[in-house]
Image 1: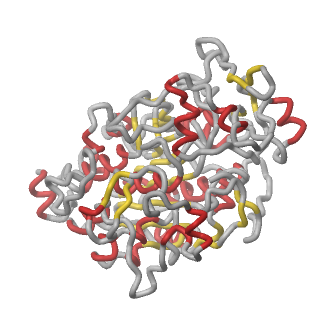
Image 2: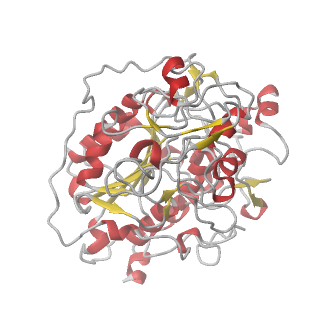
Length: 483
């Protein structure tokens, strides 16, 4: 069967194989939002590995050292829909984890010299300005749709971002299972693992890049002389090789983050023609060589494709700054965006053959109590919220498997590529990645979140605005939050 799948482009239907088990899924849609820890959204969710001592979870409520105030800060219910989050580069992740003690979240903020409050009282008084609410958590009151999806489908409480890192690195892992710096964006052998600033030469800061007028070292793909910066192999290489359709849908608007390392910055436009932190495939050499740059589309095209039953086999859906949930974006706007995307799928002919994987790209500096497991010296990073939504998803199930975004690649490869991995020894385009992430022994299998024997479940159409709050997205020029 595997041989037949590979010979026919990875399509079970083309190979004449019955659509049984995983092959009932003909569309995988990955929705990637921004900057939330698991405890920040689901720390009080029943049955999940949530904040100790709260909502019936066993243990004592953690109290995180607050050096500036000479006391400790406990998690608290934050009802504000606009948050600040905290620093979240690689060094911040390592400081937050603090060797497994999970007690560095407040000190990471205060060691930046910002002089901001982090405790409940300070945040209640100062709201966003002067408050870094990394110890706050939300519940069904603020994010009712997310909790409804969890109750009706699958919530994953041990999904870890792929590395101790920030948005760019997470998005690179999401599409390729690795993050590296390459001296030649067309030559895989020139790449070396890098979880800090893979787009920059070693030792060069993003601020220097911006000051020289070449922010992030990325050039427009529309320029015929443009050169990519990511030379290793991403999953679209295999999808193209075996004739499996894909699209990367990115919402045009503003970029969710700063590109310079600053805590705050002026928002800049985000477009499908602009390679960026949230549009990494535009800068992969194999995407250019395969002539698939035009597979990067706007989210307007996503809604048209869903309506017209034209969704590809594999899709990624990425927001703009205003509805990304990246602080200080309004989380109600992010929930609205995600609900609109999910409703569009549920109302389309593709619903009965679709698996939606919803996640948040990194922890955003927010508190989480679970120490990440170690994999290959690069990861895993901190826990993030994640869900599986599908007519075949188990209802109300909390998945405790150890997972990372590598599990998405594994599912795609098992469904459409006959189990072919991004493996330098077998994929036909070798690169020097340290291991095959999809084959890590610790990595769970998303297949366990489905019951393919059940009759496809009816869609759950939710109101995009359950609180009837009119969301007005900001215009370019507003401040963006922590990178």
